[in-house]
Every structure is written in structure tokens, then in C-alpha cells.
Image (cartoon, rainbow, N blue to C red; front, side, top):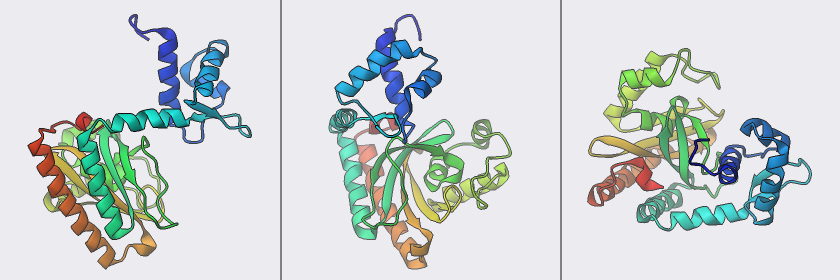
Length: 260
């Protein structure tokens, strides 16, 4: 914490940021350990946040989780971003047509951050959530985002060998660079069970002034990923990419932070 920060306010924000990344929540002891803060100082903060609805306490696990009020506050912020509404409309159209889950993501370091999601109506689908971070090199949306990076930038993000998540994960930097070169050429990035077994993904980078600022993806279980289904998804993504990039140019959306 720097000298200009208020300690209690910083603790509130630290707790929210921590729990946004811990989907199953954290006990007070875990929060204390992660934040290197004494339980005695955390207790009144957690109690107040729970009373105000920003946190909820699971009785069985005794884990704190993000509460409804935090969601409502975030939703109010989204409504101030016309570009967010526009992209959400495109995503709704994609899901309506292909019945599969659509994500909007940005790159943060070597990870992707989901900033919007439209869920498939099918009962079997990829389980994900807004705010989730995943390694970019083994996801379709991540490869779309990385396609704007140079070889030197990619090498700076990832030490070799790359961590293996499934038998299909690329662990060699040269193999990753070859895929990214193909994405630049074709405009599409792919994942085939590289992070999550049984899940395929098709993604497109969203650019403005030749800079990748975000990416759109559709995730689909392998058993539904027929050639026709993937071709249809690519057509939908290509059309949405064209619409989004036209919007970016018209309204001068040049950086990823303008989307959220």
C-alpha cells in the first residue's frame, strides 16, 4: 500500500479483487493469508461488507463469496458504456444463431480476462464467468488476442516449456508462434481441448488501426463441433468482427479499457 491510500478502503478493494478470482470463495483464514492482513482487522470489514450485500458467507464451507450488491454495482457501471451495450448486442445475435456460448475478452499480461459473456441455452456447455482469467496461449480467444504481438513480446510473456493442461496443450513456443502466424493470415484462432478437455473454441481478434484491442469467441463441446457447425460459427464471428471494428473506428475506440 502506498502512502496516499486509505488502509481500510484498500482492504475492501483487495478483498473484492481477491474473491473475484476465487469462484469457490475463501475462508477468513485464507483471506488473511492471501492479503497478509491480521484476522482482527479483517473481521469488521468482512462483517460490514456482508451486511451491505457485497459479500455472502457460505454456511457449509465458511467461505466468503462475492455478493449480489457487488454484481448490481458492476452492472450499473456497464450501463454507462455504449460500446459495451453494442458488443453485447452482437454477442446475443451470435448465441441466438448458433446456440453456443460467446465471450468477449481482453489481454492482461499473458492471460485473457473475460469481460462479457452470453451463455448457451444448451445444458451442456463451457462453465465460465465474467472476470475469469485464463492462460492465453492455450485458449482460442487468447490466441486471437496474442496474434497482434511480435515474437519478442510472446517470448517475454511465456517461459518455455509452456505449462501443459491437456494432452493437446501446446508446450513449445515455436508451435505457438506458428499458430499465431496462421491466425494473422486467416483471421481465426482455434482451440481443440487445449485447456479444457472436450471443449473447442473459434475466436476472432477485434482491431482498430491495426491494433488488437479485444477478441470474440464461441466455445462449443467437441461432440457438437461438426464441420457445418464450425463453419456457421466462423461466418457469425466474421460478420460481428466487421460490425465491431466499424463501430470502433466510428467512435474512436482505440484501447481495450474503453470496452469496460
